[in-house]
Length: 163
Image (tube, rainbow, N blue to C red; front, side, top):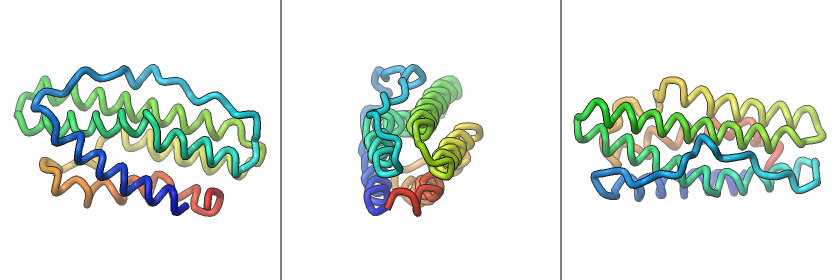
């Protein structure tokens, strides 16, 4: 679990760095088309947690950081169309992360492990519905305080499974 907490802090830092970028969000990959990682063959909790670690610390996190930065940048410009487009990209990034997490958990042999991963995927999915975790955030200084509890709530179902 320490790795995940470290990942949360690193993700927060990366999100801040990506939001500091240019005023115009750069071309983004299409996060909605990201596939779930290929199972490594092992279905034990330790192996599944290692796969989750790869997902959570890989491209999905980078896409999420870029999308959050895009939303903050768009919101600061007060252009409703740009804000809407940036929020759509963020929802796509969250959907891609949700799909990848569900794919990782689907190969678990233990039903309790599968259930925990399903809960994590559902937590991520819910965040994409209303983007409430960004409510009132317009500056980087406000981002960490809002985002850290959300990221922790996403991964808490794995606290006992992925030490």
